[in-house]
Length: 482
Image (cartoon, rainbow, N blue to C red):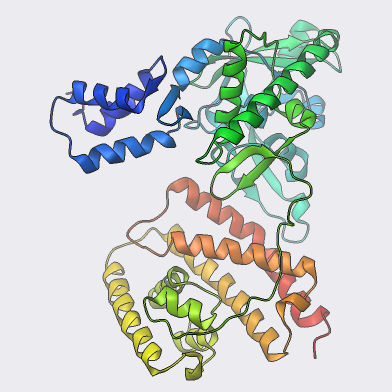
């Protein structure tokens, strides 16, 4: 029996099957025509909102969209140049990484890809483990969804941690075509949804002949990307969407595209650079070398006014080092496990001082909100939770409490944050940013993050453990604070 058609399934099908540009009005009309039933206004608004950040659409103007299927059909089989790295040359392997951008579906993981030779024969693949410093350059510009997550952390020498990736054995291809050192490979997309690419030799003498044309291509792409960034009022798209749109624009202008290489293009950029942030992921943005440093440290005057509108307002008014969602996640860990002592935790969080509250009114409001939060947590604790989620929350709470302990120690020594070395401040900020982001996502036990996010959190926790240890060592033992 075929699965029942839902409105969400219909909307996804219409988007994936689209082979022409369309507007928001076109999309709504097609849905209503195919659904033939009344659609609640709120539901329709939700479907409209999903268009802006849909994985297979590029918004090119106010309510104007280009579907991926149209772009890929128009681009054809643009070859991607895969220049071999040291590890690949030594072992006769291919570790594609970000060099397949922008032609890798966001639904596929690294190991889902397939490579075939010119005759359609499959290239064998295997899981291989390397020192992370040897293969991390291949994934420098990868979206988080394509970044390999099997990392074995070396606690003593992080640079010698191990990373397990999927590698393809291309030795037979090298022998068959008589490839020599200096030669490269070209990958042509055969099946976007299936992640299949065909591999072809790219001799060094041919690459030298293409060099001027490739340089002109990258200059033209940068111009299109710069213009796109300026016009994108809602913020930049992720990297693969930016590249697909730029390539599509040049093809529409009848510009011949001989091949493409993301690493080569990035090296040729003059006005733009690759940026990665929490909100929009990895993308290209205008380069601004004279802009602000990653962290600007200054004393913020904190003047309590006795606000009582919410727990968030109270914590901000009191100048505490955590917000309401972090506080809830901490309480969940305290109540769900015996790893934490609730009195010691409250003493650490609030300094065991009633005078931290502005007045009795704020004090009473805090306990009113606290009782309501505890009731909600008790109800949530009745429902089971995956152990990996609770373990990550507990470990992150532990890191957050250690950071607050560091702040309490500095306060006791009358040392301000701006008095600390910049290197220590940056580590402190990075650790706190991770804790805040993770605890906010884990504050609702009934709405856990997806599996990929859980894996990313667990991997990051492994990586930041040594940083937290070194931070405490520097603060308590190496700064000479008496």
